[in-house]
Length: 299
Ligand SMILES: Cc1cc2nc3c(=O)[nH]c(=O)nc-3n(C[C@H](O)[C@H](O)[C@H](O)COP(=O)(O)OP(=O)(O)OC[C@H]3O[C@@H](n4cnc5c(N)ncnc54)[C@H](O)[C@@H]3O)c2cc1C
Image: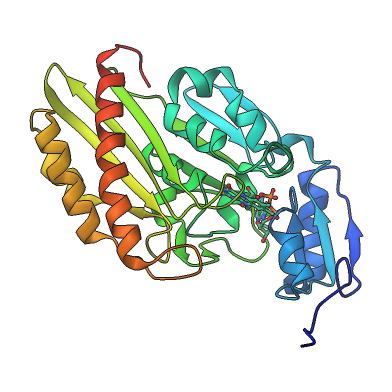
């Protein structure tokens, strides 16, 4: 049987632009409008172009725009949009204070994809399976969006609007994600289940817990690959805040998670399997985050 196989490397032809500053990038976006696409590491975009799901007339590479790369610590932790997943996973401040994000980056496919893929590309691509999304959600991150004229900061919980869709407007570029400092007594964790290591998740979960002695004073839970966007679990969180952090309380919250998610059956997993695994890894992530919170470090 003959298959209609696309043997071209990338199709069809496009113009490749390499701005050196954000100002140049905004001008190029304005000049070429809706037919242009931004390129960071290309690990999503080039796959989509190869599959002819995207056919931009102009590809604007952000790799030479220095102001978009790197991690800086101030009142918030600012991670530039083109910072590679590998650099995020090795960053001192991330290791010290944002364990769920570090674990999400470490769970990411292969080293070659970690080196090319960026944190900005991961969230702008808006896959429900994006590994950094649940971690950034529980760390209460915000997206910094700039156009040629204005800057706005959008909480990540309001950023994703559907599969492949975000609040980014034409002419805007994600310049950074900002993470507030973790409160004293914080612990966090990220867990991922996938078919093989070099694959996106069947289910992933991120948790942040804040404890005061035996009491849970704050909590955030988010999952990936279980709905049209990365999902925050408000009901399970409501069942935990103000309660004692016990294995029973975490198991009950994980039961709520498994009921609240809206997974589908696809090539990676069945809906039933996703619910089953979500319950288990949500409980395990809660227990791990709770123990880490007890260790005293703000993580
Ligand atoms: C083999 C393989 C394995 C993978 N494994 C994983 C995995 O384990 N976990 C996971 O989460 N993902 C995985 N992915 C998906 C991909 O690597 C990630 O989503 C990656 O982080 C995308 O980043 P990028 O820089 O390559 O994005 P690009 O492909 O360059 O861009 C992605 C999209 O975001 C837009 N964009 C990029 N930067 C900006 C910006 N600053 N402002 C506005 N829009 C922007 C682009 O226009 C494009 O639409 C895998 C991909 C491959 C090919």
